[in-house]
Image (cartoon, rainbow, N blue to C red; front, side, top):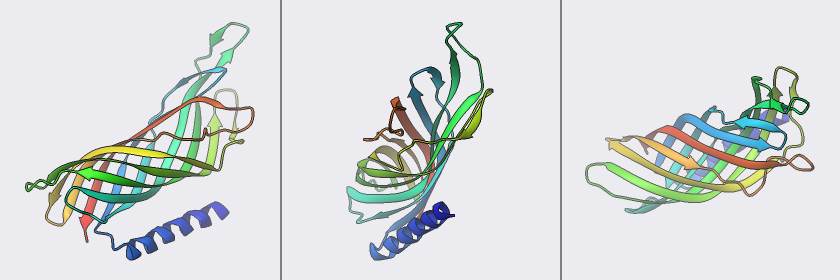
Length: 205
């Protein structure tokens, strides 16, 4: 229940921020994440979960502007457990999912074409708030524990969009490096990589 209240609270805060900042564009992004977490003692492969966000663009100038968004991000991996006796990796269908509420703001540099087709690059701070985590394999399943509740990082993005009247459609690709590994204590990921690719639909306010 507290997680739901926290999520609703952040969304309400975001909507209030939109009024205060006098947002110029409201947008929705839907797509996939390409995510891979690696921990010692297993063989891992990336997964491609759904990701979505709502966002605002504001302080928009000819060649720069700010963009903020809040959304759902799933990190994780598929894995096989290491069979130490046989020195082999089992061909299981194990999966690990870590779900986050993610918030970010990026500073963008962009083109300003009369045709309405523009490209941009951006970078800025990101915070991931842990919501839930679960693992499941041929051998065991359950709730994931030992994860950090807050993860700070960056969002680096590139994209292109087309303005059609008051509507905007585009593509966005992002890389999400983190300053903090997902796990604390003795269980530490040796590598984490998360990318997102999404279709963005916007409306000029």
